[in-house]
Length: 171
Image: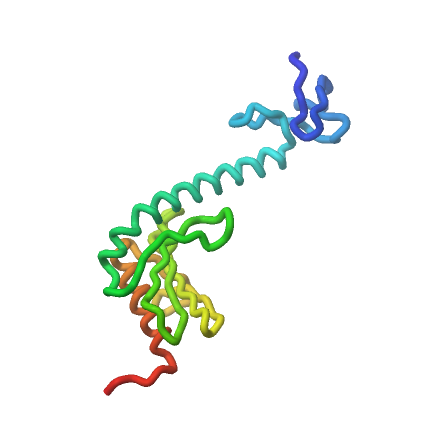
């Protein structure tokens, strides 16, 4: 048997426990993480698989958000701007829709489709310190929109309501 090197401690392991290679210093069974070719623990391999899945999701949403900026800009009212934005460092990219500056600082951000769902829309009202998703009628479930156009329309409507809230209405 070819000696295996533990990815955790760098020790060459020739011992086996049961049917699996064993790293004595770490006290773990070793399994092969095929993408990296390294021998790690079962938990370590699971963690790497989750990280790889998340990296693919981030890349997929990055491409979708960037490619949606121009079409969204054509769908929003004059004076609004659309741009790709990262909500959290290392996180997924979203499509942000900002109305012209006004007394209420509110905008919408749209998460590109993933996991068999459509566009997910959140509204961030910084003036009030609230951030919320749009919901489907009749329940406390987040709404997903099948097309970018539907998501943009819903987002613009919600932001307009937020920026009008508490403001005098004409009429």
